[in-house]
Length: 300
Ligand SMILES: C[C@](O)(C(=O)O)[C@H](CC(=O)O)C(=O)O
Ligand SMILES: [Mg+2]
Image 1 (cartoon, rainbow, N blue to C red):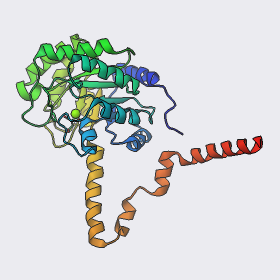
Image 2: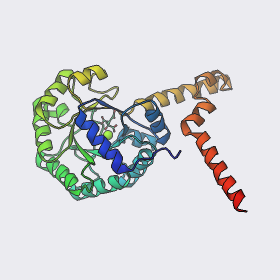
Image 3: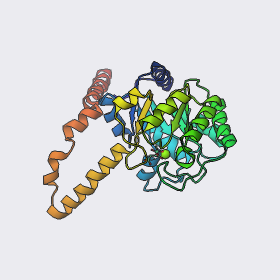
Image 4: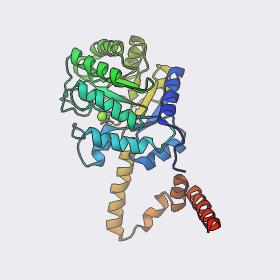
């Protein structure tokens, strides 16, 4: 009931330990707190909070329009319902290095286990689209140093994302990843690597954990968990997968509803009332209510 019994600190400690284990941690993107419950129930190792999903949820494109307040609030709502660690997309840090420092503290307070900060120029865009650009290396390093210095819980994971691969090639991405790790990044998110061989090269280039972004309709081949494990990836995110599936179902359902004049044909594909209540832990709330009621009754 109320879902998470763990403090944010405990989740961060567990995330650190899991990263150090060398196992592959799978983090599907939650599009709301309820989907975070489903991810938890399904046995995944963590929850990802995507900037693309958060923007889309507000009916906005992913071009840096969302604010720290919006992101931290939604990410906090998601993080608090699960015992799993939640990693959030903090885009470019929401401003200059001083803003990035504040971002880290706000996200710590919101109960996140970590976040990633990228080296794109503002306004940023999806890492799998053309036309993006990155800041010079010294600026990228300043963002990461500011983030690392600001953190109060040493277990809060600061992941540095570099978007250099799609712009300057793999060699430049490997160089930048090394420099970001030296500047204090706990993990590297090399955006838009092409294939398994490139992840393998990244694995060899840095000593810190690396993250693979298995987003659909992008520049990266969709690799299986088996392949990702083989090349030594530590974290895999499926950032927009659940939202894309849900919106696919929504779009189709609307046309069936409009055509048939009833949702009857759709019912068998729905999560049932019973399944929803089970996921929510409805029975536990009812039990709690009874306890409160009996207690109050005895007092009278
Ligand atoms: C990971 C990402 O930053 C996100 O916001 O989820 C996006 C995902 C996407 O747009 O498919 C990105 O890769 O830039
Ligand atoms: Mg993003």
